[in-house]
Length: 236
Image (cartoon, rainbow, N blue to C red; front, side, top):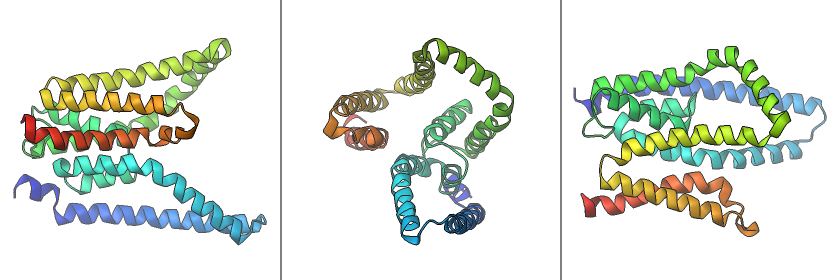
């Protein structure tokens, strides 16, 4: 059985499907319990329907980058693993980075033509443990971190934003540099995305374009995909 058939096997897809069905059932049960409790508190059906519609609308925007991340990962990792990781416990921002670094650790690139089963297994473990390990760590380090944050917040709250921004920029810079050195195509895509994101950020400062703040990240991912599709046949 070749790589593509293995990562898209029926047994793996069925396993993922069963997990997602169970998670969906749990969500429906909690929705029903929440609905009954809201009715008990005197909230009308019309208000509840309006709340549900608003919640669906709010959830759709954050789901855009998740869907785009799955589209990027499926050709390399198959349908099951990205579907499971981004649907239950995972982060669209971190899963792709984790899978790429795990694949490169085995000596292959994160592409559909170079991936191996060893690299896939390594990526699966990295993606799973990468998010799972945060749960016990939070129990141990969250309180000291919160105390430190409170100390800085009392002195000057701007330091909190500075520290968070520095951490995010460090991760993005490391990921961008490691991919940019691979050639002119990834370099062009990365630089194009940076420019596009910067333009969106500037445009979002205008009152009539504030909505761009919510859509900047998914639009940047989509822009990067479009740029890669345009320049790859030309520069390859």
